[in-house]
Length: 194
Image (cartoon, rainbow, N blue to C red; front, side, top):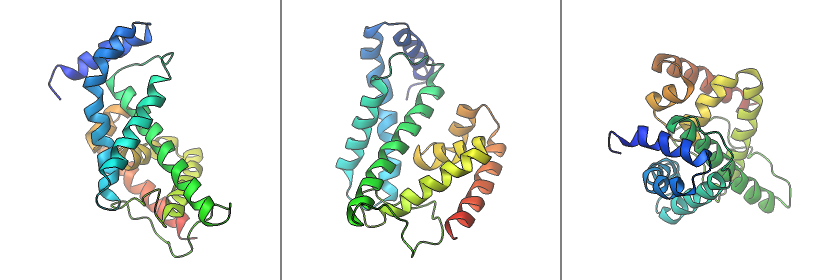
């Protein structure tokens, strides 16, 4: 992304929030590559050869984001944080549907999964989709106790943001992100091993 793009994205987001539909046309080419990169990070962690899945996730996320023109976009970081949340919902909803169909309408956590591997997210269309549902359920419970730390997991794990990008979105330091990340992983591993 060119150096002027982050500030240009912020300007266009604010214009779009203000009702300028032409701003959206100029915004799309600037944000689409980053949305693809976020989705690609997710797909890369899943089974190989899922380029279509990347495109599907990006397009569905994009459609959700475009349907929210009344959002008061603060800046580029805010936009991509919302995009990470939308991608999480898309992926988890797909995993829930898959797990529900596979188990006769009951989404259940797979008994064989006792820990969280943050290097490999279950593909929402795989047999391990229930693991993704369990992770989402645990993360939702964690967000009631530790909202910021849960947000760190959401941005890094589901959104694929780096430590620095997560720090920018949350307005905290990179070392704080790393502390939150480590604590959140430990809590989630403990919860999912029950």
